[in-house]
Image (cartoon, rainbow, N blue to C red; front, side, top):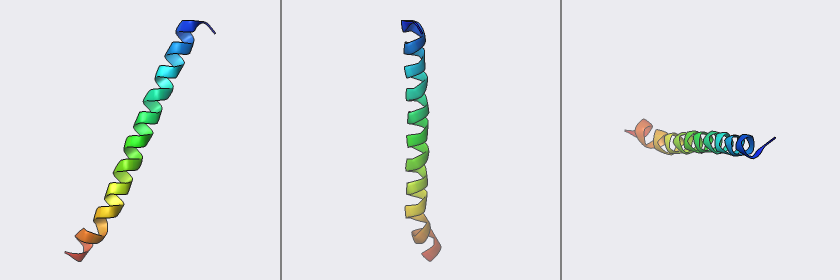
Length: 40
């Protein structure tokens, strides 16, 4: 593996982690808001 491949792999891994973090935050916000919406 050369430096370019390593750089590409790290970039791809970062993209995956960012996407997973955004999904987790969205799920948590949805779970937080559901009880309020249900009560209304």
